[in-house]
Amino acid sequence: MRPYVLAELTWETVRTERFEVAVLPWGATEAHNRHLPYATDTVQCDAVAARAAAIAWDAGARVLVLPAVPFGVQTGQLDIPFCLNLNPSTQTALLRDLIGALGPHGVRKLVIVNGHGGNDFRQIIRELQPATPIVLCQVHWYQVEKRDRHFSAPGDHADEMETSVMLHLAPELVRPLETAGPGATKRSRLAAVRDGWAWMPRPWSRVTEDTGSGDPRGATEAKGAEFIAATTRRLGAFLIELAAVDPADMWG
Image (cartoon, rainbow, N blue to C red; front, side):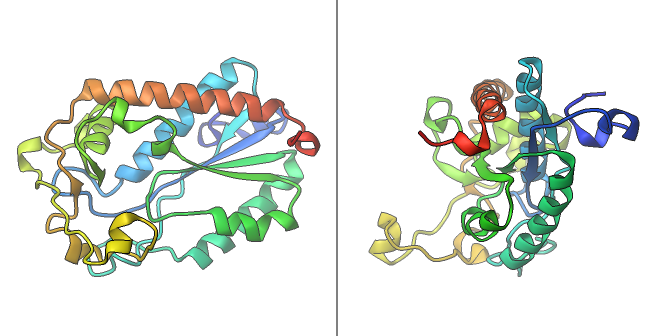
């Protein structure tokens, strides 16, 4: 039993414990090339949240990891089998309900640990924050640590980084790398989109033939372990700092 993971606790434990920070892993269910499972994003954000919370708990911070949400925004992948979509408006409603359930039990801060590139909670937080005293925050776990310190191949989906992480966290779910596609992607014909100052969603099945983005063949378990260790150290330190700060005095 991990005392910071709600799914593993009993009523007798949680009714006498006070938690300052709730951590909500939020993943997705989607295709990840030919070698990674549909649960990749959820497995990763759930594990990162729990490992970071362990660091914070051992330092005295009272954090509680909630069960992961396994569905994300997939509006660009609706034609790919079983990429299960949750619209941003539905995410807003779900998050509003969860905030309402946390408030009466003393939680004063909520961190969404996001594991899916299609999810972005910033505008949702802007909408919900004025109506709750709980401090709302999002963290894209894959941006906590600089990936170019650990990986050489570019990419952002079922690539060298994600494959290495899954080889570390759940190797039994990873098919042999020789079964993976190359993760080649087509670039936009629009210069502004290529340069990054204009944005539009990518129709995924037109962009990539194997649902991947980035060559995974350089992935190793050791790279994944190193990246996860660095990530959870930084995220754990943030949770310690967040737990200690007074919500009424967060800016100075």
